[in-house]
Image (cartoon, rainbow, N blue to C red; front, top):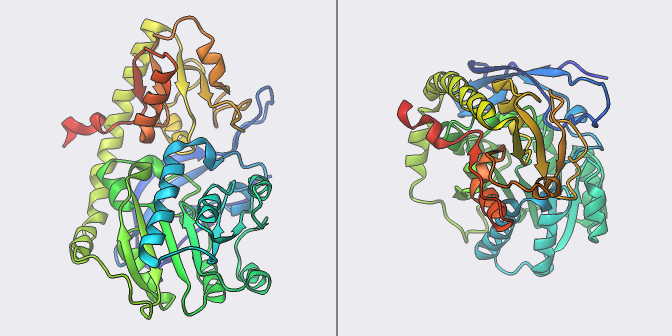
Amino acid sequence: MTTEANVITTCEVCGGSDLKPVLDLGNHPLCDDLVPVGESRRNVKYPINIVYCENCCTAHQKYQVPKRELFPQTYHYRSRFTADVLNGMRGLVERCKQAFGDMTGKTVLDIGCNDGSLLGFFRDQGAKTVGIEPTGAYVDAVAQGHPVYNDYFTPELAEKVVVEHGRPDFIVFTNVFAHIEDLSAVLEGLRRLMSDTTVIVIENHYLGSVLDGNQFDTFYHEHPRTYSFTSFSYIARSLGLDVAVTEFPARYGGNIRVILAPNSLGNVAMPAETQAVLDREADFGARFGAMNKDIAIWRERKRAELEALVVKHGKLNAKAFPGRAAILIELLGLDETIIARVHEKPGSMKIGHYLPGTRIPIVSDDVLFAESDLSKPLLNLAWHISTEIRSFMAERGYTGPIIDILSPSDFKDLE
């Protein structure tokens, strides 16, 4: 069953009505709508059409797919399979310790906790942990000993958490805050959770990094919004908080991390570069024009590059399937005549399914390493963690060239 997408007509961050169309990527399958190998079902495609609010520098999906289609119980992603993600989580916990001291006895609520990986790092520091996770990934978190609510975050669920666990000292969203539909309900839920000393930690893709690196693949359906520092300044004020810390971790090709805290805490301070960040963000809207042109050139060049490799070497093997790659596959029109199969780490729940919109099977890495010839070209779909992928493959004896499906070098001569 499919549901019509919700059409956004006003900015969910500042309430502004002047949303400018800036990017139309066409229709795409949902990145986690994985059809089991052998089944005949075809993916439903939804538009990816980005509109932009110049007032608060926030990019929105004009057509938002309902959360129950995006994040069903069968959701396949698990945090623990990506070293870059785990390293980022460790860094986030350490940053909280630096800013606010010992975590012992503090209650940490992770909204969108997935398999509980981040909660585990907080527990290692002595924190009491609680999770909210609407998908089947919650089972993994519960198995690690964390109390988890298997539900979507709502104001009503927030009240239940307070009754059963008290008001949390820390509320954490890691690459989740952009995933949740109905931002006004999210903010109301936070108001019901917060005490006078609650700290909110949010890390998400940063719109500036998306524009800098032509990371248009981050605009997949699961991200109804892409934020700037200006966005979070508005959000902080709506919650009666200050943006106490702003940082830009390298994870996922460029994130923004903000820590929202009551000004009464008084032990953290805004960086001196804040005004420079605000000034830079004022130009974001205009930069989408260049991105549109670059995408058209990239599509033509990359498709030709891959077709030439197929002529020379036969159908390609590919490595990894992060959700964001679904956009790239669709834009390039890649199918089983170009890619023979995609390889994931053993244990990945994506194995045994087709790549969305195709009949390209996802199989275990073991299949690849069982081959006698490890010198053939390999297409890396997880281009944003290229270093991790290349190191992983080299350690296992892969000697062939690895081609990133998207790379900063694809745009160097376009600058």
